[in-house]
Image 1 (tube, rainbow over the protein chains, first blue to last red):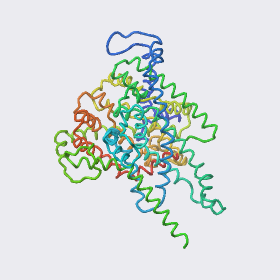
Image 2 (cartoon, rainbow over the protein chains, first blue to last red):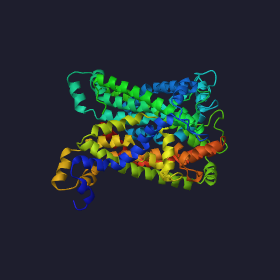
Image 3 (cartoon, rainbow over the protein chains, first blue to last red):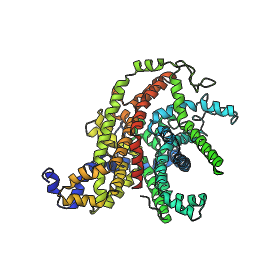
Image 4 (cartoon, helix red, strand yellow):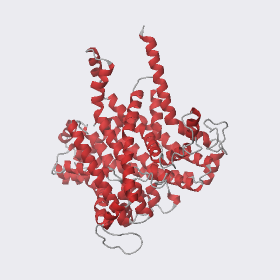
Length: 299
Length: 276
């Protein structure tokens, strides 16, 4: 008690101690997480930029956003990006099942699969940018195997660029989700499966009746995390395509950034941020409702 | 006895699948390594150089002389360590009462925090830039680290970990007359060590790999962390493949080594943190 007089003095009720514990962290979160949200509301109602006088413009920015073709395209691209989510779940569960086996050298494989997660997007983007170049290794292999007639310019063709970025996002993230699913698989009690086997269940039945239901919370967790990451995608696009060709890979995060830090339209950029946040919030509410109906507890 | 050949086929099939995925995940890195070891080799040559035909460290020597790697690596290390220490300290403090205390507004705070996870990061950047400027730390490492000195995700993970702690622990500490702070420091924290390792590592990787925010708030490229410096290098030598490859390998190796030495802790922690 004597060693910590400060906490002892205030430690009358549990609530006051709780707030003391949380104060430093909450202060930082208030400043860098909540304040940007709050402050962007008045900011969105002005034409604040580095040049010229700042005026109150009412809802002009919002009206402008709804008529801004690039913004609408960026929203559509961000929503399209969500298609990567089920692919991530499929491949990472497959990898988790593979590395869940108890064979020699399995730890080496787990590590190898995780390496893309720890490397920087700058490095990953650079490697894949070269591999996927018109004269790159991917085209060489695909055309030699006979899967392709013409060499594709993966990242600078408006029909393939967004999908190629999604592929890179998936490739880099697989190891991360694999680890979570592996944890899920290992949390399934072995005696449960054995008991089912003794009762005459076959392998397919145990997977369907035991593994999948018990893995469900993990699938929900991973889907949610990867969904949020997909909808907010920025780094890959910023480094590899900058939204191009045209607006083919322009995502909403990138467009908000461009308006803020390249065009210096801080007011407009804030308005865009608010619109996107509201859309994502609405989406998450739908997902949570949907999930609750299914009776799966997210945490 | 009859099961043996079947077992062998299964075993082989498993290894083939494992190897295919390994090639898919590691192949690009090995190819980069091979490019970096062959000075003068064009990455777009036909047939492409997947395996090195000769080994020469000239690229490494030249890029090392051109770019001040010790400086960039030191910068990165300072930034990453600041981020790790701050995140561990602040998120352990904040998550603890959210997990084990009972008080009014607890669930509201937690819900509010989790709700912010959906805001696109780019949306907050402009205001955070203005805040950092107003705090007068622009151009310092504080400006790089402060906005992510605590993240909601880490609070979330630590809360999960603290929730898995036995209730009796805190009671026994109270019976012994320890203050809440001491219970936190000496009884609770040792139990959640794996989770602390996870957020430490995640934060270390995050800080090591962040490139955009440092470029926004640091004025002098000499202060850049390695990822920012690397994207700077790419901009300058778009066609000096060997140099860029060697620079990338240099930037990637430290973080891979850190991961290799801590992965055991980390993997244990990931399972613990998600289970909750």
